[in-house]
Image (cartoon, rainbow, N blue to C red; front, side, top):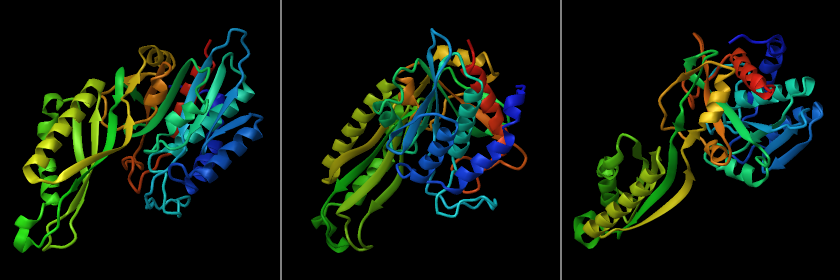
Length: 369
């Protein structure tokens, strides 16, 4: 992709903005300093800003009489990771932009600047979303009016597996849906020497872990069920009276989600009957699969070459916007010889020059007839 002169001229600002944001990472629903920084940048160029929680959105007015409204979204939250990148602008507050959200935010701020200098024909809605990392921020932004009047919406996510300047996506499902839930088994404590007097909750939880493949067997090529954390017991010689399995179920088809959760419940009843340990399930969050609109993806392809890739089991709450209006998310490549760390690692980083490709693609789309 050729980068236009107006976008090339933004490189120094991209470096400055992204590094400012990188120094002040904040976890979901705590993005107060980040939100204030974004608001100041938008108001400085004359835009009116509305808040939803710690998120914000604004609209650049179009010039055409028959204008539509095109949306672009960036996520602004960080992760509870201690940074070890060694960069002079590294975070020191115990959090880190290890998923590139500082880059997404920088690109949208600079897109806003371009559009105020070169007014588009259509209205452009710029959404700076809080709480993407597990807090359900997308749904709350929508409830707060961020998507009102929007006809189509776009976003990208930086990708360290893809070379700088390359784009990739998938028609249909790009990211999996997810159910994040805990299973608590409740038994009865006893000394291990008289274990017949107790009910072993840890044994019940172990059976669940053992039987995970059986639960998802009918759709094992399109779903996965994972126990990432198991907490149980009080001492080596005591039968555990409680065990908590923290689980994630990933899927690409809503029918598989319904079927999988029903099969899970049947398995839990079977375990209760076999062990005597009662169980409860608490669901913490549900994200639908991110389904790219064929229309929106083809629109994006008018302005950038997009490699087709397989869907991934990672989740993205941009799916909430795509459920409401035609939407599309693409991967933006950031890999170079220096930057090879994966997302969510404590050494993750990228060259800000890679952001110019994302800004260019969005700028072309925003100013298209």
